[in-house]
Image (tube, rainbow, N blue to C red; front, side):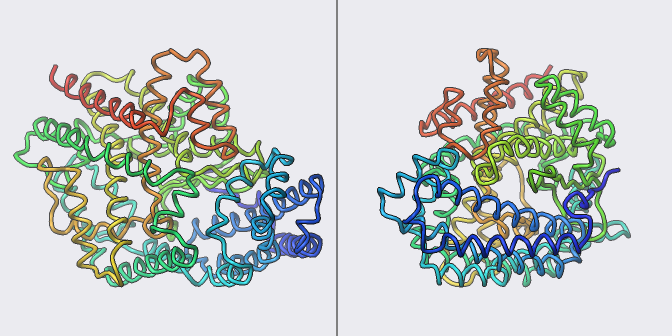
Length: 573
């Protein structure tokens, strides 16, 4: 089978509803036992309270995973998702007091609880750091109760709208994933017409998508003002456990190396024999329009992962054998791809929209990297398993590199050049394009008042042009392509995490290939298994890197430069 079996969560709606009733009962009992009583607990009692709190949140997570995955599979099930969002919100209200009251404890009591609850020590330390941004219980309760009609409601509207969007192409109506896949066709006319079709399909949606974005922007602004965050991105940095200065350094280092993009595309234009390259030529394959069926992709992933680590190979095989993946595009299915960590008593769930291109192989490797990371981090418990975005993309991008190296080493020269080009373009998309996204978001969220479609278009085009310089021409229609990017809606300021992870992984992969670290696989497996139980700085330090050192970013960028130089050398032989 190539579709999810969601009955692994609950065999029936009746079983789901009974689970919710029991969860509500446990949450109410927890409230009655510990609300307004934390300061009276001893260390053992607080440890028990933490374990009970984690169990309730894990239960809420299980219900919401089931509801969300049903919705992702069929976005017409919005009412089903909304029903269980409301149920879980009310359950969560009963335990809302816990973190608030923890941050109302005196510093001595708080530190004592942290020291004597080592399993949750890092989680509690991070919770204490958010004290200055925490509101009163009643304020937090209101925000929790209204969350489902705020930003999350507009996120759902975005998902439903994009899932229903159709793009006319050669007499057919295609879904978003299908029309985007045409942009990688070997036929320039197909790429050009696909770009026009995407733009034509997005154009009538501009008013709606602009309005949705404005609501996301306003919701974030209100949240920042209420909680005392200086910038729209500040809460994201806090959750990512890094400073804005570190993100600024990442952006500066990346923008200072935009010349690598022009260097690559100038060579690609020469190979293609075009006078000029346009936006629809970005992903033009060099050589044949490589096809790949799912069975072949599975085989490559298992072999590449196994050569790195038998554990990785076995987990990939389990993912395929146990139907962790929902593989092909379907009516009302959510676009894109993701791995959802779900519940530790089940397994991660991977959503794909496999269209039979070689690019889909790397998407598969990417999402299975996430699922391996998620599965391994179950070992540290629910609260510790959630990784900050700064390290959440590490396994996914690393696994892409494993598959890339595996495939590259088995190809003849012409196909190797094509593969190198594809990998470099993927890195550009993961590194430089995400920097463009971040600078775009910074300008959008700093804009006073409601922002118009025209202004969004102007900023988008301005930031996009920085990356490509004079090496690639962006047509006028490209200015509206901000409007289909889901991260702007679901997770503002998420995107720099991709850039962070890309440079980190390139540095780690270079260390792995150099064989200078004898126990690299052992350290890396432990790195992933620790989930979010340690800081990114501590985790990266396991490999001898310092994320606060500006030189760190340039280690990764030097690897990008090496790949571009290899591409130019191979294509010139």
